[in-house]
Every structure is written in C-alpha cells, then in structure tokens.
Amino acid sequence: MKKSRYSPQQIAKILKEFDNGKTAAEISREYCISTAAFYKWRERYGGMNGKELKRLKDLEEENRRLKQMYANLSLDHQMAKEIIEKKL
Image (tube, rainbow, N blue to C red; front, side, top):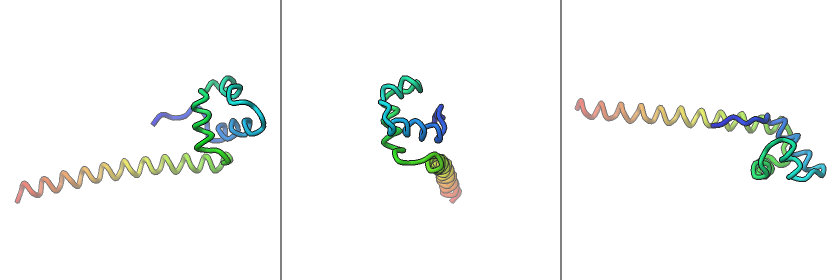
C-alpha cells in the first residue's frame, strides 16, 4: 500500500480549513492534491481529529498485516495437507 505524503494530523488540519471556509479548489492548489483526493479524505475522515485519524490509520495497517499473516498460514496449512495426503 502506498504511503500517504500527509500525516493524519496534516489531513485533519486540511479538512479543518475546509470547514472554516476555504474552497476545495484553493486547498487542492495549496497542498498539491487533487480535488478527488480531498473529497475522498473528507468522506472517509470527516469529523475526526488528528488523534482519531492516527488511531484509524494504525488500525488499518494492523488489519492489513493480520490479513497477510492469515493468508500465509492458510497457504502453509494447505501445503501441509497436500503433503500428508500424498504420503498416505
């Protein structure tokens, strides 16, 4: 997964600027992001502060690692079953 250029605290600050009256176009130009990215952040993280946003990102990363671990273990288990079946 590609790492974001902006930290959760920076994203929260950018979204707060929008709430304070800046337009999406101004924010996009100032921070060199697309308006689509801005609206995606707004949809996903709207109403969160920096701490909540960081916690959410950490949980998403942990979830990704756990899914990868499960996939590896599942593959190992399947290979072990095939080896056992061949020996019998």
